[in-house]
Length: 144
Image (cartoon, rainbow, N blue to C red; front, side):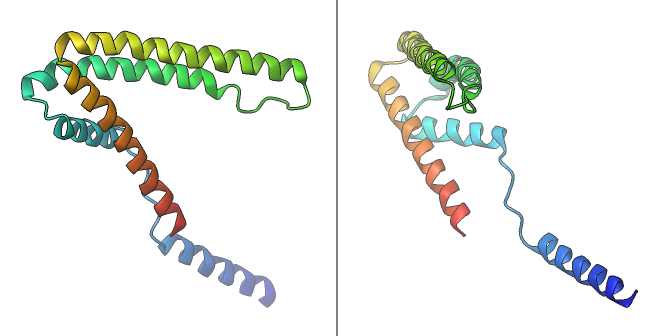
């Protein structure tokens, strides 16, 4: 009886130490999007008028890209022993990549209708830098 009680107390104390540690902050998509938009606005030196014309198109593109990323997610867990399934997964992933590039091309053309080309290129580069930095920050948090 005493042994069971001791084990329960030890388990309780161990669980309290785990709960007491600083948990990793949860990913906040709204904050990520706001930070991304602020970064792009700053790096591309967008005026409020330009930002108001650009970001609705940008958000629309991002939502459509998420759908394509979601379709790619289906093929993560393909049975590697089934050549037919692997071949089908490769074809579907290639098709998703092509859809992604076509979507980007379509929206880049729309961006060029509301912004000068130099600002569109600055936006593309800023977005890439932001995502690289966000990835580095996430990796560094995991290493702690």
